[in-house]
Length: 236
Length: 402
Ligand SMILES: Nc1ncnc2c1ncn2[C@@H]1O[C@H](COP(=O)(O)OP(=O)(O)OP(=O)(O)O)[C@@H](O)[C@H]1O
Ligand SMILES: [Mg+2]
Image 1 (cartoon, chains in turn green, blue):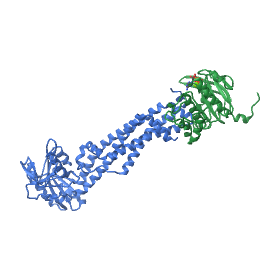
Image 2: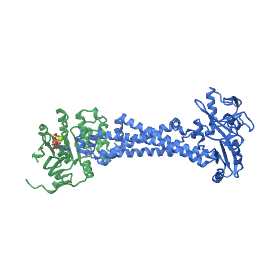
Image 3: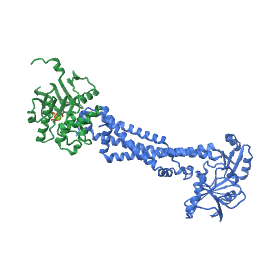
Image 4: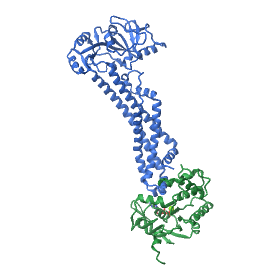
């Protein structure tokens, strides 16, 4: 393997080196991730595959700077989050980095029940003190929900809610889309529809990391990282 | 989307709970506003009363409480009396313009208390602001018949006699204690003071009713120079069997009595406000706990701690502001009704609040602003703790909660 050029390294969307995460619960220590070294290049579509408890959510939370590693190094969107196990970016900076570069998608959609579809999509802009109604509408049209703009979550199907959540994750034009088991709550037909949407977004150049324990889904993704008991056992 | 809209949506999501909290704030604010207005009106009326008095010194029997009227209202009799001869001695003191003797005492009935006020020409001269309703006239000093009714006293008599027409001069008032009627000579125009509640009779008639010939209960004194009240007061104290009260002392006592009654009422209002503030805190805190995951999602989509803090704080502020505006609106519109309720609550000082005709609650924009600022202050304070709790929630923990 050739040494990658320096500028290529810098342009990586996210990169972990020897990264570990230990959860402490009283005296108990849970090693959720151990010595993770992995990089995500722009435009890549990566699947993190592993059984329950393997550390998939933990990894995505670290990549999305929702949490910080307890050892090793992590860079996201050109910013050093942690180095040699020490946190280098304060919480306010991490919030901002997430606000500007990350899009999150969850199994249970997590839409705000009081807001309509288009308002849910606009929500992340609120934290940036921006407003872009037309882009929110455009994104909802893009995910096939142009006719559901003013519907509330309770008036939508699971598949529709997940599409709204995807539009919400895209509103800040993220460099990295993190999807944690996004099809865990929908039937296989809806799952395929949503997966096709991810495909299209990736074809447009979006970097995606999708965590799942669904081997069938993983088989359709080019790059698969196998995670087991907090370690990458294949595909780094 | 804006913070305002998001906060409003969150509040309307839980209509009943938000509504009840807003209601409790509204009630507290309405009562606070009414009390503040009432208080201001009362002070104004007290000052006006003092100015009107034109009485600078009162001479009373020793041991007589400052507030003879309160004693009488409760059915008491003056413990001791002044001799009529004292009046002459007082009148002879230099610097005194008028020394007007009065005999005030009360007769208790089951449902009311009649207060008689025996007097002569000198009281009429002293109280030169008194006017009689058309057709009325005062009794003369040598008359042994005749009564003039205070305006409230006239109304009370009307009700008791089941009459609808106002009393007209020439009608008669039966006095059981005298076993004869007194001719009604006139009715006093409302003065806005306790004077409205009395029956005015010639001095000898009053002494007859209470069987105290040659005695009086007060001597009201007007000085040539009010500034001399202290000096002349000291001089009068040397007379035998008298107690001297200067008006500034009397006013001070009235104010002190009012202060302590007010203090109690304000204490109750502040407790009510504290309870509604805790209610607000509890409502918001509950909604914060219920929305743990929502807050986690907000953090995941880029919200910082400061955003979560602002949102929760804004929700609290909105809730108290809405309650405050509703409460103020109700209090201003229904100020008449509220005043009556408060007056009933302040029954112990009612006799000092003068006639029922006087309006005590005055509209003052400064009080509106003060009340609003106060309620916003409560919102700000009550919102801080829930807002801190919400902003301190760890986002990944928040998302893991079921
Ligand atoms: N906040 C936490 N505190 C303590 N332990 C945690 C915490 N979050 C995760 N863990 C533990 O870390 C390990 C990895 O958890 P993680 O949620 O990353 O797994 P996962 O691969 O996402 O599993 P699943 O497929 O069930 O979602 C598990 O043993 C889990 O119990
Ligand atoms: Mg998981």
